[in-house]
Length: 379
Ligand SMILES: [Zn+2]
Ligand SMILES: [Zn+2]
Image (cartoon, rainbow, N blue to C red; front, side, top):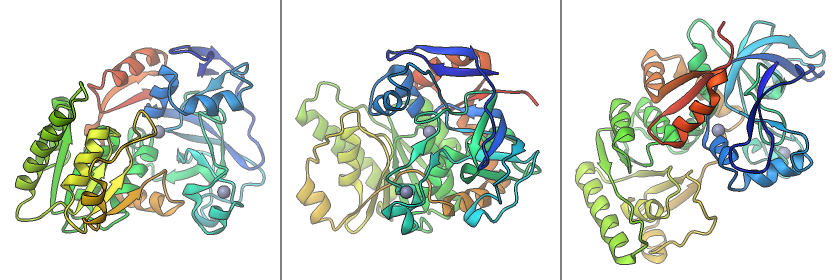
């Protein structure tokens, strides 16, 4: 079969290779991948930066064995392992050949302290598809049954099924606190920020304000439900005074757009240090800040920690992965709504055939895109 593999520890170094079709283990399902989408993590693998490098090197004998990448995908079940009782919560849903499944990318251990308390999304021994083991940018994948999520093929098309994993990040982020009747501000209108707008609106947010550095993404934000779109230009020079003035300007615009409400829920989806400070300045006293964006450096200085966090009585909440399986159940409910599906489609701005993966990566890296999807197999 064909697969995209990372073959060397340097930028680029992806290969469209012929490899053996995987064997379906007893607790796995063999999936014929239909479509897959590109993620920021894949960009880090492509550019060869960030913590993902260590994870790949440690599990591939320093890339002596190339790694098939990709963790956002869907496909058709071709074979069900003999020990698979079912999938989903308590393995209660029967799974059959022909089912259209999306993939949860985190394989959890079920035994660590967190797993024993039902917090599978923060499993301390998790392994990630396309990072710690072979992923879904391939014609076939042997998927642990615990990672398979069944879709209704009558309502969920392949291109929607293939983005349920990243959409689930947004479902997790935007439902951690009930957005109904709230004023929601989203910093960073990349794919997960855009999906968060869709989810916040679907769950009844009263007002949605999006902030980003590109007009292209703000236009998408407005299209999927943002009432106000605010363009910001982060200060590249690092001049503290200018950064503070830009922050004040943005927060002034946010407060005007929010009135008579105040920013109740602020989502930081960009990871930019200036956006983190602006999010903390923008949130109302007693409000909540949901943190999802990953900064380039792991250390971040909070400029006004005492004023904005402590005196503000603000709740800070980090979001990782999807709750198993609450997030997936909410996702299933959301993608059953036609208006949600049509907005998801608006976020998918580019689709490429499998063999044109290099173009797909360049499109994602250029940032003039929403979600970029690869069509792995036609039908
Ligand atoms: Zn991803
Ligand atoms: Zn665990």
